[in-house]
Figure 1: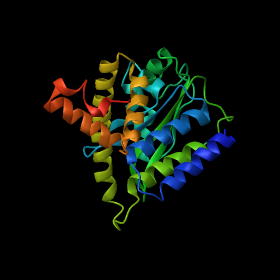
Figure 2: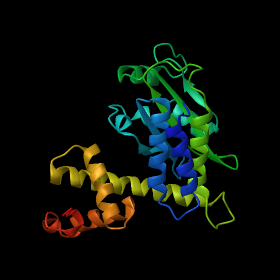
Figure 3: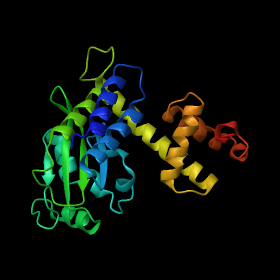
Figure 4: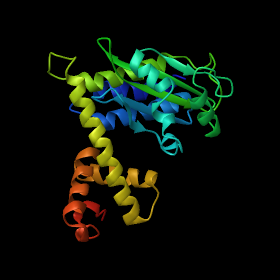
Length: 242
């Protein structure tokens, strides 16, 4: 579980927290590390919005393909976020607490879901949920998931502000807005280059890095370009990789 690769990823995430970082990009790194650590079918980081609803902020590719959105924001995932406690469907063929959720998960090829709370100072901010292919057992220790959820909480609360109870609300709004922009920009690139969204997302990151931008800043610029002058998209320097 805590392989050298995973330990290196944890160290990289921790080091990033000591720099000026893009929150959404770091949450994506946290999700992908959880995905690799648990050999997951998918991972989702859900965040509670101002109204208390859980919204999927970051997902790994397999989780994005879930046909039922409730698999990203309901059942144990919502419970973990609201109650700031680990919540689990250990076996989607036998769960009695969240029957509808478990049935949908089983139909999607998910054998278990374990959600780790993302919280700061006792306040629930969201949860990090692991969708596993097989039923959950003791061979999957909680330490990595709990550590990654704690790092996600730090990403949402760290900064110069003394009032850490108020800061997460603004950070969560920014992350959820960024998630929308990233999805729009990824769709634009997928359509322009005739590729699927996962390939387009990799392209977006590459284009952003080449321009010294964060993914979210680049996505915002691309969406703004298409909103204002869509006819310029194909010839724009924003999509030129030469």
